[in-house]
Length: 75
Image (cartoon, rainbow, N blue to C red; front, side, top):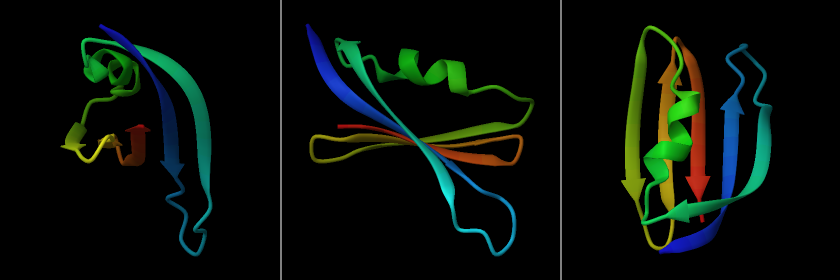
C-alpha cells in the first residue's frame, strides 16, 4: 500500500555560535512503510550512525554522517 508523506530534512550547522540549519520539504510516496529506502541516499560517509524513532503518526531518523548531523522526518 502506498501513502503520501511530507519529508522534512534538516541539516544542522556545526559552526559554533550559529544555530541556523538548512531545512528542505518534499512530498514523497512511501510503499509498505519502507522509509529506509528513502533515507538510504543520505547515509553517505565512512562513519555513519542512524537512529530511527517511530512516533504518533511520524517517523524520525537522526543521522550523523562523518560528523554532519541531519534529521529526516516523515509525517
